[in-house]
Amino acid sequence: MPLSRRDFVHRSTLLGAGVLVAGSAEVLASAPGAIAAPAGGEAAAARGGGTALGYGPLVADPKGLLALPKGFSYRVITQTGKTRLVTGESTPSNHDGTAAFAGHHGSTLLVNNHELKGPRADWPHPVPLLEGHVYDPGAAGGCTVVEVRNHGRQVTEWVGIAGTSTNCAGGRTPWGTWLSGEETEDRAGQNGMTRDHGYIFEVDPYDQSANRDPRPIKALGRYAHEAVVVDERRGHLYLTEDASNPNGLLFRWTPPAGFRHGKGRLRTLAADAGVLEAFKVFDSHGKLVDDLSRAAGIGTTYGVDWVKVPDRDARTTSVRKQFKDGEITRARKLEGMWWGDGGCYFVSSFARSESPVQHDGQVWFYNPSRRTITLKVLLGVNADPAGDHGNFDGPDNITVSPYGGLVIAEDGEGVQHLFGTTDDGRTFPIARNELNLGTAEKPEFSEFTGVTFSEDGDTLFANIQEPGIMLAITGPWQRCHRG
Image (tube, rainbow, N blue to C red; front, side, top):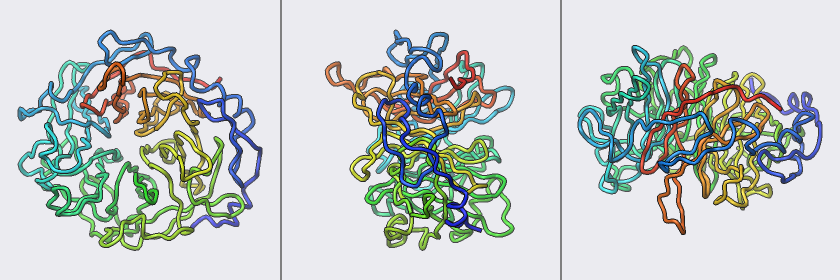
């Protein structure tokens, strides 16, 4: 039963006004009708973004690759043009979403997306077309599986699936597989494609034979997929869409009656199996919130309803364009998502001209029991992205840290970081990309992607998307408590 506006309004209490933005000294008015942050949130947020919190200042890397706090170190796991697959080809480029799984005898298995869009001929290092593992021979993307042993000293990499396009983010399943999302809506005949794209594919890191004959999970819809998470208790899948004109949507898929999750079962579903819905949120006055960027304070809470998608395969009209204004809620660049704390954290990367409340990133938490979303992290507009002053912008891939809070991969302007957040929304740096792809006069740094911890919590894996580098970061991890 959906949460009614009357119930939400009855339960809501307006607690306060302006809340400071994490990592910024800018004060914004609270969202109309929203529930503001609890007492003390303003002072806590005002301290965010500096080096007093977390692991201390970042130390420049003499190798010019990755700056880390004192006591931390990194190891390169794969690198496009330098490391090779078991079949002899170069590691594919453009590393993106990644998940880690416990392998045999203490090893770690990582499924790594490669965000390669368009014709194979456009890419020097596409995902190789491994026989039996190809969906569309015209597409350059896919996933590789990386096995790491002996603290990163032994690395083996092979193709999971190939012939998919623009494999951006995805999600780890409770049954030990990876769901890889195509961030594209290309159809057969467009951009060199011979089959329709914009789907989710399942990849098994343990069993290469299970990845043969890749099949899109059409029940989850065809659109510009970003991330996906699984609610193991209720069976729902939640999915983000990174799109614009108009902005993308957050989706929920409800399985058909009697369906039980497990390895390979999603791909057996009919294209119209279950119900795919887009979310609409409303404030404590029962008023629809048309775009999540309207929220202006950490702690803002909205109620959530779900609206059925008319044509999930987007045969004539993109899914997000099938809804009229006032029917659903949109958000700019809905990106990373991770399940934790009984719900899902998800990212809206930034907002500009489409909103009177501009920001450089939000992280929300959806509570499926309460059917509410709450703004956990809000990044003010970074006025100096080329500097390194403790301000962050453009959150993308995200993971829940075993040490509390979140770790976020930055995909913004200028300098790029991995940064952490505390439970109360404060931010702190973990790493800085020092690999300059530009010039001394006009430096350019690629985004971080694929942030994920090993099963034992000892190693944080992350990627530098271009040219394609997977890194393993170790050090004195600890819980970053509230101040």
